[in-house]
Amino acid sequence: MEEEEDPNLIRDHNDVIYNLFISFPTAALGGTVEVPTIEGVAKVKIDPGTQPGKVLRLRNKGLPTINGYGTGDELINVNVYIPENLSEAEKKKIADMDKSPNFAPSKSAKNSVFNKFRKMFD
Image 1 (cartoon, one colour):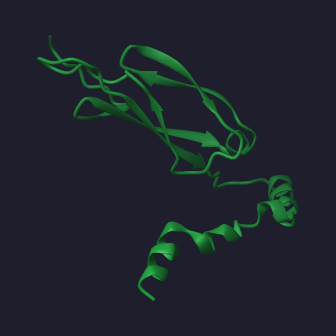
Image 2 (image 1 turned 45 degrees about the vertical axis):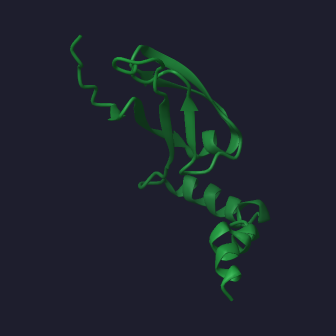
């Protein structure tokens, strides 16, 4: 059996990694996207409020173990695409959204894992 390289998938032992780019509306509202796998294409559900950096796992969609049992997973790194060239109308819509308290960064960042860890040594 010979291995073919796929430009969309990165091998990590028996797992494969795919960098998915979704739009801001899809990240905020959720939806379904198609991602490549080593067997073809799979539909993946994006939950509303998905944050950049979230990793989704497709079990058993990786590579089989050589001389062993089991199959790796496909790990999907979620990235949110931020457009660079906006029209004036698009800029206005985003500026209007920015006025809503729902678009302010979460205050829970103060209670992040790193801050909790730091408090242990204070």
